[in-house]
Length: 333
Ligand code: Q46
Ligand code: ZN
Ligand code: ZN
Image (cartoon, rainbow, N blue to C red; front, top):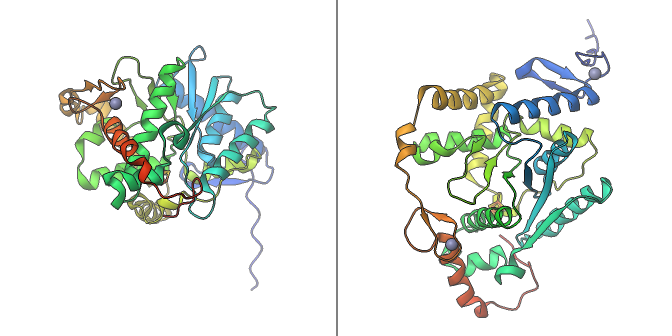
């Protein structure tokens, strides 16, 4: 007997054709109801974790990818005071990655009438070398530039938040990102990291903004769907240096698990948070971490003396004359 064609999935609220089916929530929604659902869920996370209020100023780190642009969009739609920060890393990798990313952010701002504040920090302009160049010049050059990149982004985010008086620094990490990191840290039993991972990180030092991840409950595909429904264009290419990263392998494994048991990722993450908050897991470790102040930049550091950012970039700047004359950003992984 010929198979009867499957009836398209319908929205739970209005019976229109659904644009997304979220198996872990047993919930299919049409475009407008999905947008409404995302807004409500985000508001709930912000309130539950006491991330920020409408009186506080939020700095959103935007990379040009779907998550960070979706986050900026959601916060603006919810009426929060959200400005953007774009850090130009000078990564080309054959796809003009950084230039493309900046362009999507400009487009996003233009679509919203142009009346948004975006802070732009071009690493090469401010510190004398792009991220790939700096990685080459510092001793980290043998490895991928990711550790230097992460260090530099964290430093710049803290600095801009402090200089411009933002209370909060928001990043677009989604559930897939968070779970991949949690999985990696658990495989290593990296208790120091497990202590600090979460949707809210209170300031570890005077003058630092609190760090929040309002999208931590959303799966990556939900954020992609949100961007599409809202007409947000974003950079599809991953950073060329992300290829082969351990976190990507972990994501693949976790996707297999999720396909077999929908909701596995969400429960893994939420139960970890619960074990820490309600049962005091890792609490003793938390109390043992002692921070010092970097004498050069004033940011916190786990060692006495200069922080890793200042040490690394001093070394880079001493050697910057040795750079071959290549066009800005012409680098490949
Ligand atoms: S750390 Fe590494 Fe990312 Fe920097 S170099 Fe690219 S992949 S952007 S999140
Ligand atoms: Zn609907
Ligand atoms: Zn420093």
